[in-house]
Image 1 (cartoon, one colour):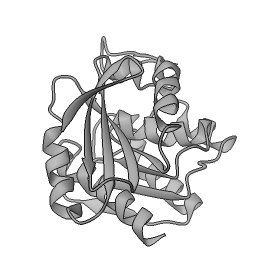
Image 2: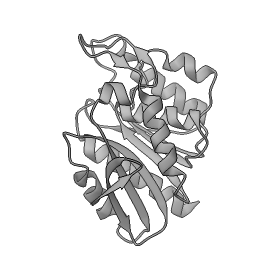
Image 3: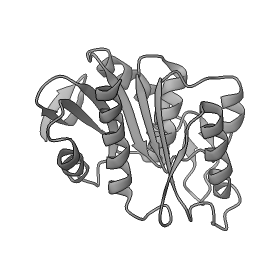
Length: 212
């Protein structure tokens, strides 16, 4: 991946063969998106695609769609997601086929982005935080505009003692039923194979563009 400034953000970008789907995904500035790009590269080496990994320094703030109490002490959600979404939309408008993917809260952000705009052709929410306070009510009045949606979840994620986060299983199943799709189930809890799960979602989006 190479560094490229896009509307004021220094992103990590990978172009493979030129053209194809362009997938945006958030990454924590403490992590390296090259690991995810490498996994995608192995699966999609012969397919044209572009990855745009954009940095997020305040995960709970920059990816939360609205303010909400945190599920852990001192980790409230400050609801600055609209600013992040404005930036993503500006970047996506330059692409012929823009898609969006994310893991955990970034997975929720990807779904929310597709409710707020119709610019994204596809979305992948991998272990998405669909337990987020107010999300279920929000979905009752909004639809996900992306034509292709990928949902995955670890089979132990809903077995948490936290009653709010424990809703993730039922909420994921309900969303899948609403969209008429199947959930991709992975082994383990929320933290197992996170990079592999996100790479699988991104790969699915790239493949869906090719097969469309």
